[in-house]
Structure formats: structure tokens, C-alpha cells
Length: 142
Image (cartoon, rainbow, N blue to C red; front, top):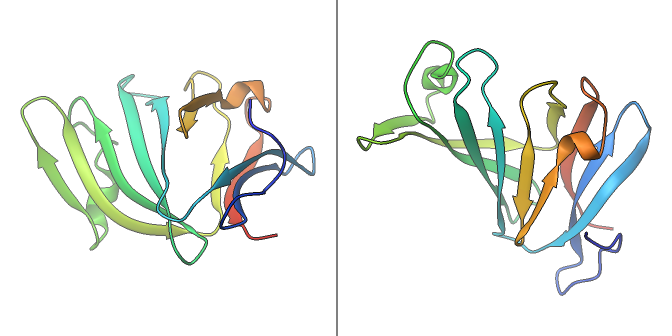
């Protein structure tokens, strides 16, 4: 697992904060332009979803892409945004985005099996917090 420190050449960390527990659950040293993924199972379509985030130079998170196996009701939620583009390559649907978050709010799912992968390590969110708990994922510069 990751250390709690934020010591790296840029001195920034990705933090996962629990509103319910009122504390930082995890602090991961990162660098600008690092990419991490959030994988989960869509609640109604039951298809795997993979969201790609980039740590931006402004210290925020940028949602750049969402991938899923098919295009169905509820999966095209990003299509209404002017900064999105939908592509289908015959295997996967890719929604290209440019959505900035500071912080990124996320509720731990009951059945979604949410797993964050960053710097070669995978973290199941249900191991950090209970289903339904509100988490904030953010970039901090201590």
C-alpha cells in the first residue's frame, strides 16, 4: 500500500477524503500529468466502465476518457456536454472528455466494485470506506 507522505519532486498528492469519517483515508504521491483509472460496474447496464483521469498542472483532476463495452441508455450521460466526443472502435465505446474536477466527489457503491489504479497499485474503494459513503478525490499541495 502507499505511504501517507507527500514527499516527491513536485510535493503533490492525490488524496481520498471521507466525509463520514472526517479524515483522509489515503494519500498517494503523484506528479503532474500522472494518469489513473477508476474501474467499476455500471449499476443498471452491468457493463464494466473505465474512467481515465489526469493530474493537471493546476493541481486538479481532469476526466479525459470513459470506456465501456456497448452504447446503451444511461451510458451516454456525457454526450450532452459540449466538450465530449463519442467513438466506437467495433469493440468498445470511448467517450473523450475534458471535464475538470476539484475535488472529484464519489460515493462508494454497493455493487459497483470500484477500483482505482494509480502508479501500478490498485485500491478497492470498499476497502477504504463503507458503501454509500461520500469520498472526495483531490490533488493537494501541502
